[in-house]
Length: 135
Image (cartoon, rainbow, N blue to C red; front, side):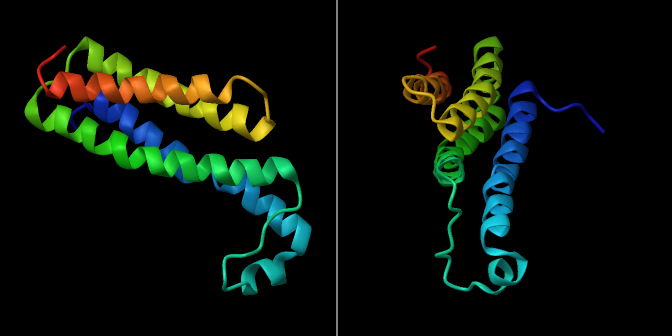
């Protein structure tokens, strides 16, 4: 198998990360309401009692929302052959920014959530500008 381009590698890691971010808050919900209740719930209204778990759920939702922007940009960079050192670095930084955003949001650390989000946003901007031929 041919090695992945750096942008695709970081996209894969970001997808895996995003796909796992639900685990902590679901486990806490199960701990709060029990397995039978958690498994029989059909309306999506159960929520963990712990505030950190509620923040983790919101952080996961934010990661999913931003993956919808990030993934097509990465795929377009790859499909057009526009990848370069800046796009590879932007994708790597994006992964760590999303990881930091989740951790900071879940732990409720003030003043760091927005900067972590902004770093990821500017990584998306870098990819978009590369596709537009600006950088």
